[in-house]
Length: 264
Image: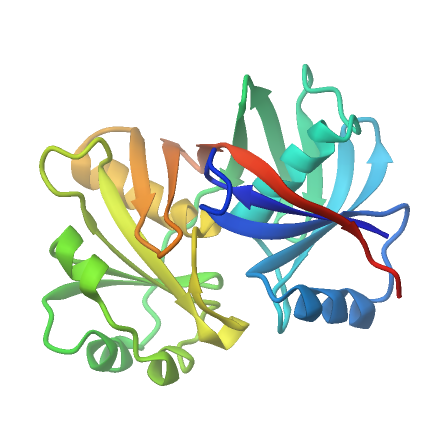
């Protein structure tokens, strides 16, 4: 079983968010895929099975569970398939997933992903969120299955935030996302961090699915449809997001850093 590690949302090795990618003729059983993801111990391991030219079924696993949507592992898989000659990069690539069809297109060395926009809903977790953010001024936007989103006042507060992972693990979502406007003079518009101890990921380096919520929010707040974002994890990552009505376009780069074989 061939496997590769792809750093997503970066053009530099050992930055961005690493995902393991596996292309197979058919999916093994769920327990085996979960065991492989646990062994890889990355935010996500992606498995793809070909269905037709430029069409694959795609599934994502964290070290502890399967998830319905993952941005960085989708980007990683799209890059891996192009690098291996498994797709025609002149045509759109379609993934069939638990979140419906996701269409990807190649634009030079960048990859553009068309994802569903998601609007956070009230969920009754305001007390827990206040405990997590402490005395910081904040706005709790609510949650979707993939994330609960909190807006802080400044980039510095996001950068210096020390997560209470035990409390965050109690959130009814796959992860907690904190976000704020970028400092004046930066070449990006907003920043974010994401924490998912409930999904086996204490801090996610770059969280593509979170921008399905962040892009509509910041587009409305800042009055522009296309924005630059920076995720302030230790590895760091950057992407361009566009709010397109009920869809969000995520644009980024990727680089393969490891190739190998699973031998068991």
